[in-house]
Length: 163
Image (cartoon, rainbow, N blue to C red; front, top):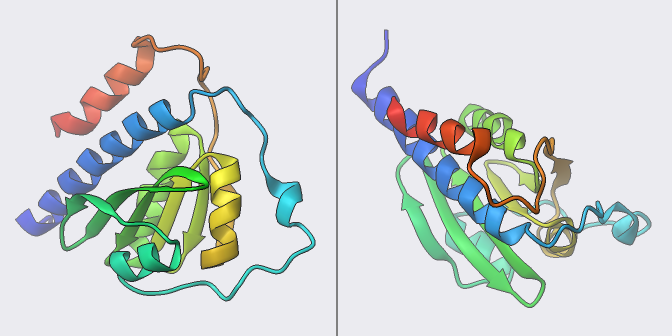
């Protein structure tokens, strides 16, 4: 049985995912497909950071621009000398994994820690890993970064808002 709290949480997560997708489409328009893995292959990242969105942002040297502030999900846009990215924290591990699984369809690079994720271009995620630790995951890229057209992605976005 679904409660209104679970339904509200899912709607909040879907709305945040749509914001993330738009942010990624804007941030990833450079066409650079490098995965950035070689840069830190030999260096050991720090212990994976933990904490609130604000604590993680401070460790990443970012002043967070909060976009979503809900019990289940907090999400902010960040800009550092390394570039732009989205930083999100989650109330549960399951909520985090569901969010990542849905967001992977939009491509991008993900720095994943316990109940948090940072999303951006590979070079930005690699730089963040040096400050926050975590594991790098790469989303599937089934669309061209050069297209600004609506195609299927607009339909996908509207489906996230519809339920």
